[in-house]
Image 1 (spheres, rainbow over the protein chains, first blue to last red):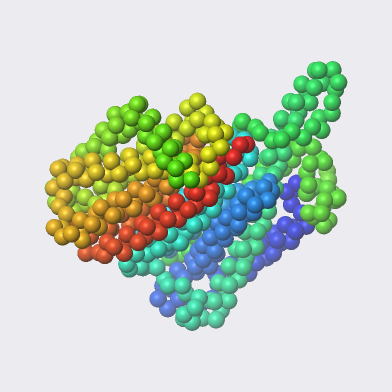
Image 2: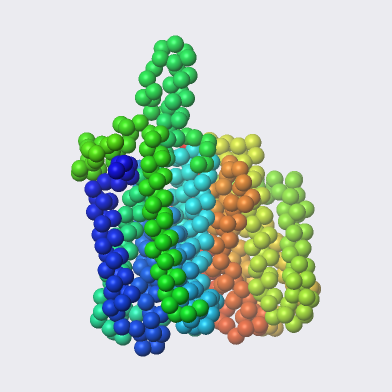
Length: 256
Length: 59
Length: 226
């Protein structure tokens, strides 16, 4: 087995928990839980939909915290963590919207409802964070990009309540289920399954974030090595033959 | 769209989507690791404080 | 701080007065958008009147994008932002000044577009002092919010190729709450929907305050030398 450069014992354990937990969620959510009184088996979509929602907003919030930390300490790691977390937040957000639409069609009779607060506000927020990912692709100096990204990540997080409130007022009625955890309507096993699914979602989020972070870190190393190599060659030409161990301060013009 | 199709589609999207993304990070990590000198691959080495066991099983 | 900001704002407005880019390009564009909406809605007078508030604000946002792009571009020319930074003026003042200049241009655009919708779309404001006040205050508060957010996000795209395509995708989702709030507020002023425009105005005010404060704090980070 070839070693996996982005895994460690921590992530391996997280990965094992994710896979075992996923099996449990499939068993519980797919077979053992009772169908809902109103929507029948369709309620089973909840066990992937709700974790996706939690992952989306966790990604955005973790991204903002890491960005704040970056601006405070100027830690390259925090910058990459922010990138990783928000990227996963956006992916989960897209999945969230898609599963919402799939769920909406048979239960509400429509894929999309402009009257629904969570649908519309999630869409706007995901689009907002797509902008963040666009900034991450900017062909500028690492530090400039990191600073700009951090500012956007924090601004976008400030937007979460603003978007939520504006959309809530805008569409006075909502089709969406009220938060179903608190109203005591759910059966015990259903609630338990949902909790398990959320926890597994968060574990998967941690696994993905760590892996993505390490890939980003490697990408940055490749950029640096490329630059350091170029500098080393130049020096070798200049006859001294300095080792390629020069660690030049980042800066690579290429977006990739 | 029948209920069953809707449920399967939703589950497949979330698990498949995130799973594919996870696999992508692994393959991309492997490809990139070839370009980075050993001493800069923090998760491959045992000395770093970041990981407890690191991985001795380097190929 | 305010004096420096006024200085910057006057500098930007003077550049505009000399180059006339906003006057010769953004203004015609704004009018063009109004005309296109009329075509899109098949010149249905009733529909145009009903949807005037929304159409008005979409036209404002599109024009604002161009104005902000222009304001950002003049920073890129001759590395103006570098010399500004070296001049020792506080970044917060620079932000405030640039936002004020954009805000002044936006207000002018809004007045023009309002005249446009009155002429083209038969828009009518409720003949009460409160409706008129709502109209004016909404226009001003929204302009402040849009220019503050626009100046901040514009700074993110300075010195980047493909700036023209980047700014809209960054800024338009941010401005979505402004579009919602300002449209509803105008709905009240125009009497096209029974909503409480003043409540919506408070959302716009919140947005404006958040982005002015955030811009004052964050602009320095963006201006830092790499």
